Length: 161
Image (cartoon, rainbow, N blue to C red; front, side, top):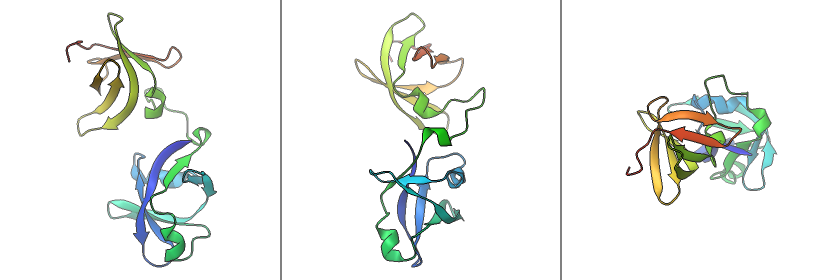
């Protein structure tokens, strides 16, 4: 299961909720069905959903009032891996990077990718090894090769950073 967002609040009194989406663009989350909510991964279908201001609002099937919607607040929204389209030739899903070994061009291991996050300038790999390192995910300047089959990312990185 891959987490794509979470139910972040209530919207109105007719069962609608606010959704924080980690997809890009953020309304892509509306194209995946069913959603699997919470730790139990209970499948839920969308009844309605739309952009609203800087966020999203949705109503799930069977959620008709504010009390039912309140029970959803805080739950993660996940999908099965096979629900996602295959990445384009020049694309990599962040979750495919998690757990990969990161090594320098000289073959020195820096650790494993714990997670990835976005900044205004570029994505950042959080690598945990002998210490935590934040490496900018910038092709050709820092990231030289990503080999999913070997489970390895090769980087041009100074060990002192």
